[in-house]
Length: 194
Image 1 (cartoon, one colour):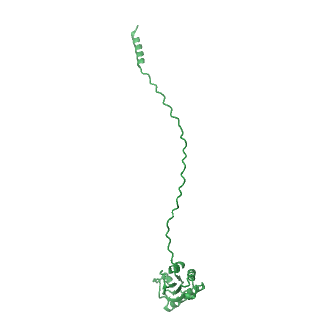
Image 2 (tube, rainbow, N blue to C red):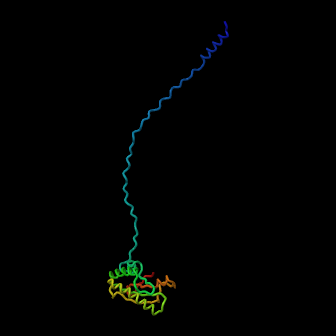
Image 3 (cartoon, rainbow, N blue to C red):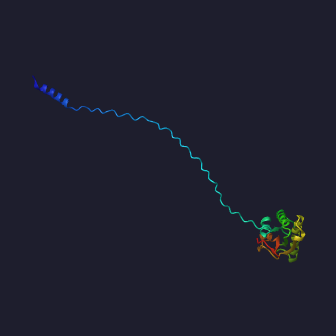
């Protein structure tokens, strides 16, 4: 017999007996079942009722009734009415201002006024004094026609002697062609500086 084939067979058999067996890994555990958590319904908190924020408002202080400031406010911010060149007829703007003045004067019948007629620098002194007088008379007549007592009104003319605008141009002359209403209070005439 041949020992060689037998030795080879025996060696193969021995090697196969010594060979490690493949390790069988256990199957991974199945994933845990997905359990849905019960839905949690959060109730929204009831809205908090806040007191409205009230900002402290500072109201403008109104002028004292019957004061010069009250007269100015009632007259639309100006005590003057303006005239066209070489005219003493009232414009629509002048009429609106004088209506407001007459309304105030009827409410304060114990207040007297001075109506001053003025002219621009063009023309002679005499001509402008006469034109200023016609402007003052025009304003006075309108106020009386609106119910103001004639005893409340004194009219005078300054002509070109008291300009409110020193410019010798059309803008300055237009401002100087005016009639100004002053209030008599506590023995003196009060004037609005504009």
